[in-house]
Length: 285
Image (cartoon, rainbow, N blue to C red; front, side):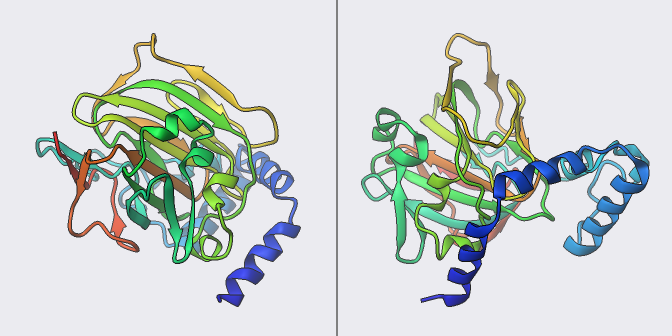
């Protein structure tokens, strides 16, 4: 039993997570030069952010902290694997867990799993991923925070599910059952010629100022009703590696694929670091 992780989760339960996140969000949107520069400089030092990869290291370029945090990278810094039928990482980060979905359960941490149906907020959508494959990628504050397509596909639907805003780091994952199905999340379901249906799930976390998508803008954190949108008649098709959204602080992306849809690369395993565009798997079809 990991007592330090349990204490960490207990402390989070006491915090007004939504209120705190809203306060941070307002500060992160401030355009006051002294304030946004202070936040940016502290973040670079605290998280050892590599500004050599950023499109510019000139702080005047960034109007506020959020613009810095979701900064664009220089062209070519994250090449997209072009191998035929390759599936790539949608984001920079560390793989929390990866593998096979056991019937309808996903591994969160050693001894802890959770329901695909609860994660997606839709039991019918969950059925197609029975015995499928999944990957959970944790984005730390130092990482590039834009999310890209793991494979070419057309957006079929999106589902915003309000929820908690617990931290999504490894310590919380080890001590809080159903973490990713508790937190705020945005489920994006795509259709792909080689993979069939697959899902990209944006999971919010404490201090995340918002989830943003290319097609819908901001999904601000907070209590409310599930918001589901049918995009099947929209012209929202993306190529592998296209940007589809971004986070305003460290968080998690979960990928879901159907049974036998992909074969993971040998180096894709729990706690391995990945970069956006790196080959993670190969489509079997």
